[in-house]
Length: 92
Image (cartoon, rainbow, N blue to C red; front, side):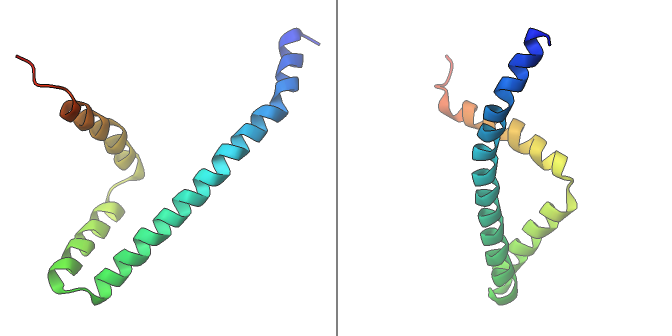
């Protein structure tokens, strides 16, 4: 057996365990966060005053109307770019 294959097979269980230790808590956190945001959006949409209900309805319309890939693209490119611009001192 080649050395690279034995190395890969030896390290596979520890890599899989590390992935499980990272993925399961991340999945649970995202589930709880999404469930909380969805619950409060539904309650606000049903029982809030009209202006707040319109804002929530617009939020739901935007989230449901855009593809997930576009949302991820905006989150991972626009948010860090705006954060880095706000933390730098102005150039002279």
